[in-house]
Image (cartoon, rainbow, N blue to C red; front, side):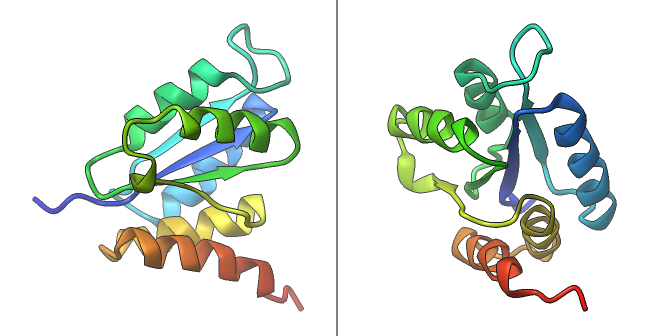
Length: 130
């Protein structure tokens, strides 16, 4: 069985992270989407440990795309990625949270390689809604 690029959603809000996962999951069957949202006690914020666990959960061997919502989610994710043994397999992507997640999951569901999934998420920034 071929491995699929995994997606990690890093959000300050457990509800936001779960909602984006729900939406993206309906569009990309078979893509591992892990959420690291909020603090360990369920509050608003970010957690090194939750991000690290989500990366492990999403990693099936083809790489992982990490999509943060804003601010400290970016900083905390950068810290986690700096500590990884194989940082080239886990890519922090600057993309809109919802649109980037949807684009990444849909692209990953086609069996695309890590670089293509990253590019798809990044290109979501250019998508017009009207």
